Image (cartoon, rainbow, N blue to C red; front, side, top):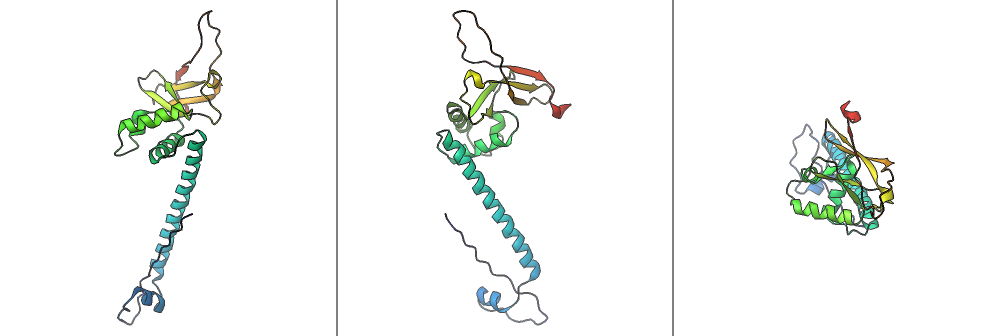
Length: 194
């Protein structure tokens, strides 16, 4: 574990006497009381920074573990794309994911999504809108016929939602036909648009 040390010198509190400042910050901080308002602001800034560092460390660790469970090497781009997909409660298109970044090539995001899909971290959805969408798989998903579920496309907002508790119905195909994949999309109005 890496430890980062921050050293701050606080400006002296204003006093009625105008004393010349000591030559070094260390002497100033040690020889005069600090400005209470500045100290309070600094305390809150440092606390906020420490919370961000803890959150980022936790998220990075959680994301890395998830990627490694699926035999995916954690890179910065893979971590970011995974975290975007994880935060969403809906399936996202390549374009929607691309909008989350400032200067990232579309091909880089596409390759990341392809890697995720090849390792069963995400599944793709063709909901009939003309854009393939992507959503995270469950931990035990292998994208086999038993793992397939219904998707819901809202006619008002255009968002596609996974209905993971509703499996695709089993079908008996005619002799000579073999089942490989199914795409079952229900269209209607989502709860947010009612």
